[in-house]
Amino acid sequence: MKICIFGAGYVGLVAAACFAESGNSVITVDIDHSRIDDLKQGIIPIYEPGLKEMVLRNQAEGRLSFTTDMEEAVKASLVCFIAVGTPPGEDGSADLKYVLGVARDIGRVMNGFKIIVDKSTVPVGTADKVRAAIQNELALRAADLEFDVVSNPEFLKEGAAIDDFMKPDRVVIGCDNVRTAEIMKELYDPFMRKQNRMIVMDIRSAEMTKYAANAMLATRISFMNQIAGLCERMGADVMAVREGIGSDSRIGYDFLFPGPGYGGSCFPKDVKALIKTAEETNYDFLLLKAVEEVNELQKDVLAGKLIKLLASPDEEQPLTGRIVACWGLSFKPRTDDMREAPAITIIEHLLAAGATVRAHDPEAIKEAKKIFGDRIEYSSNQYDILDGSDALAIITDWNEYRNPDFDRIKAALRSPTIVDGRNLYRPDRMAAGGFVYVPLGRCSGGIC
Image (cartoon, rainbow, N blue to C red; front, side, top):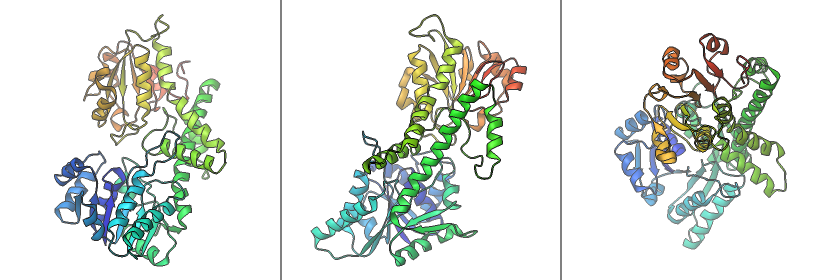
């Protein structure tokens, strides 16, 4: 099938590579000339395991190409995916200017029947706006061309996006035309070889499904962070509680790890957008407002624990003269994405308290430098930043941090102090090793 995808960002690039991998002819369009030039040369703008190899393979085999020529791409394709950004506006609502801009561009140049697919995360009712934008452009051209608009939200986890696309939990297709639904089923059929997980529904329900899914996952995270806070005060172990409730098949274990708060490109933005959508219908989404508030407060917890442990008599800058080593900068492992990452808030608090901050991350140092510049120190070696530091803060649960050389850590730190925002280690073993170990939601030696 001939496809064009507008947007060479995270969603668009993953979708383009995976569709090409299944044999389709895919043109990826972006207005960023430098990004397209890089992609033509095999330079991938994002880190996602397996993506570079897939892009290069399909480029070499002629199934995947990149261009800034929108007209050429649209005219050559039957299915046009819109996978551009929907950044939050000042009021939290999703900004649709890029989505509708692409829709108008398609309307200006389309030359026959087209299926326009909203792949971007968009509020309920966006398909109607996309349809109207295209129809208006066709009217200006006095062109009587048929087209359909489909909602096909993405459910990709950063760090596992290739697997999620190639072996999806489900593919949601929002469509009001039987013929178009069959074409979309044909497009996704190669990804359904083991089991058909295709769900066809009306367009508005498909648009809502994406927001509802992310809101539910964000709710689980905030809920568990609140449970962790209560466990600390009651002397309970949040990890034992997680095992106890996760064994209930109605609940399960996923997204029930306490941590420094959720971040990334989806959860913060989508929670805000759904709250705003509810407000526009005079519906007060109290639960999601609480989820968002809890998440913002959770980002302060790790810095608060460090300040409590390391505080000097200086009330304004209690960490003056202290050095804190941070393991992890990206919002989650297996990505370089630092959008809304808890590390940003944590490090800003530490700097404001007067601390010197050193940081390591396997992939996100380049992104961190854009945010912090030379206000913090960086190293490509996770142990180098420990020498002479007063404490180690674990912010992101990269595999490299899960079973480190504890003797080396202890020897390098001024005092063997670890504040663990991901509960990677067993408190009893850390105590036996002579560490001051402060996890989340599980008291260790009386320290919480």
